[in-house]
Length: 189
Image 1 (cartoon, one colour):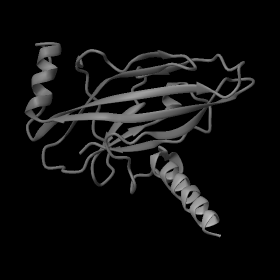
Image 2: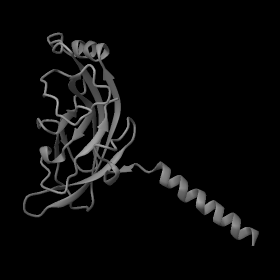
Image 3: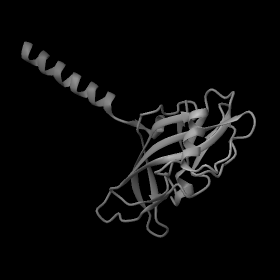
Image 4: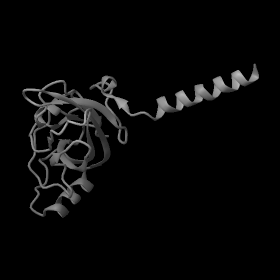
């Protein structure tokens, strides 16, 4: 009888630990429940125009740099990067993006970071901030990701200096996904 209790307790702990260590699933991710820094968010995207295949993705916001430090890093990347407009400041976000095919035949790639609407900053009241054109620190989060690969790099945003809780949005449809790609939300604070 005691052995059954011990085995049950061990099984319960194993399941509890696995549930805690799993990355957040996109269904729990929304503008009212954005992912924090360091929390991987799993989702899926559909690629292909005739015979679409579903690929698994994991997006993790690794680091956020804001204000004078972000401007300093942008100026180190390119001294021609301008100062933000009055009342605004830069935010740099370092992101890891992973792509996995579900079948051995899944060979399509995903264009990451080159579409203007793929990474967007939102104000705390969900208004979109204007896009900016600056040179980010290396590596920039831009390029082609193939199944089984990951990419890590920087993106830049400009936000209102008074906005204490801006969000970052990842829209997979802007990178060539043809459907079933969910918009993902992350805290930039």
